[in-house]
Image 1 (cartoon, rainbow, N blue to C red):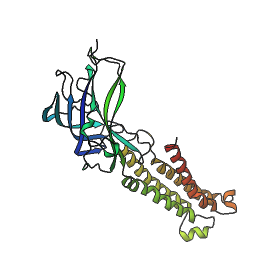
Image 2 (cartoon, one colour; image 1 turned 120 degrees about the horizontal axis):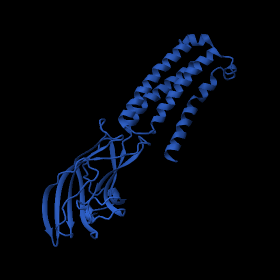
Image 3 (cartoon, one colour; image 1 turned 90 degrees about the horizontal axis):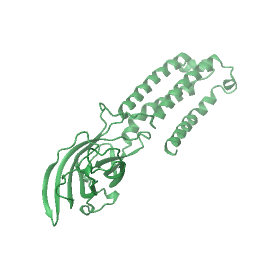
Image 4 (cartoon, helix red, strand yellow; image 1 turned 180 degrees about the vertical axis):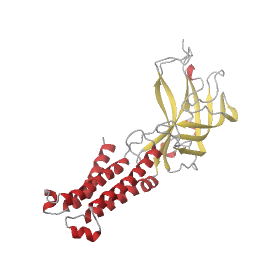
Length: 319
């Protein structure tokens, strides 16, 4: 026969030093490490035989709880601990660098197999409004991130094991306490470091398209030949590939990410400009070049690029 549920109150406070990082040598395809220094107080009316503390199921290693103080308030006992924990987070990078994420601290009672659940001690906070960020130190700094909200919540989970305890009920929904911090990426760094190369190359390619013409004297005046355009495109292609690979190494996302669309568009533009230069001189009697020289390529260059990026944006954010 299972033991009836027991509730233990728990407070959480996140204070410096704390950081979020994405280590390149992590085993996880989208690795994130949460390092936090926390103190917790537990007030409980549960039986004294219960283990005092907190269990973090997502931690790489269970932290060592260092007791800060212990006191009694009426019939309740309050214990405060200090501990560090390293957690792994799975984030969705499909909208990088515009996505928002939640850093979640998932908490169990050490005697979770005996149907003991944690509940926040809301009375310990001046405000529990998300925007007031209860439990977050005002001096906490996350490099390249802006903290938006902090809040407690519950999620239910169902497990098909009794964890070796006769008191635990299998295949039944069990509430688990989460402390979540909503963060938004600072866009300045990724936009400057990840969009400059493809944007500059697109501008340079537009200059090449502007110069291209059936008039060989015009091309000689600018020193432009089809072979020159092809080799220039190859150099541009190599530069974009290097930047693209650097982006993938940094983000380590398993699938396609939003900012990659700019790199992919640049690949096709490089190939298109090279093909355009060859056809313009080798097949100048083709209908697109016959009456208006290379005007159609000059006019459609930017509209095609921006329309493609607009379609990708709509598909990424609105479907």
